[in-house]
Length: 286
Image (cartoon, rainbow, N blue to C red; front, side, top):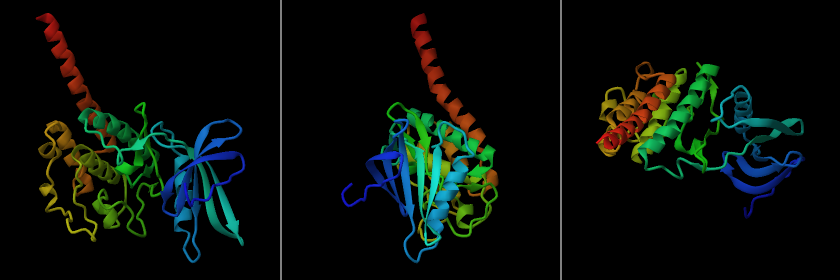
């Protein structure tokens, strides 16, 4: 926390600095009235900058308040700070999500990854059914608590289904082709981001994307050159490998819906459990 000014907000006691983001700082805090832990996000605007990051924070709040899923971080309150009648800062009170990101602690267990990503797929499907696209699903935006609870965070780039963004937004290693090409975004965009994230979780490697600044670009003609996850990790069952490859199809129309992805992940999870149960039954019978 060295060099970081302590955040002071009436009604909250800041406990510790958690980290920085784009023009933002996040603190762990306690509600003085209820004693409940929360996270405080402070977004600022530098002199001469546009309102991009402030607008992104407002967007995150507005979308979060329309969602209701246990695996999506809640945002309770937003405060706007003006200077000389102009918006200068945003303060957000958010659910405190204790745990470690998938980025910082990648599980080596295929079963655990299936469990985590089944939760994520159901949450993202909920977003789609509510009319929104997350549009920045990546390992750093998935938090797993010590008790196994899963939380999706960072809705700053989320948008209504059908949005055409004015500029390219996304994370290079997980970005969908239509994000780079600035075409309308929908639930299938999240499917691609999700598939690229699950690919990394299972293999430790990134898929190539169509972001122009990258040398290993992906196109409709080269998508089949991506090595299936089961060829890089022999513990990945073929049906899971195929599901991941279906998710990262170049053409959105060729990808499954997120609700279908959730159903298939649940079925894949059940198969090892069923096989283990059958093996136990056979052992007892002999």
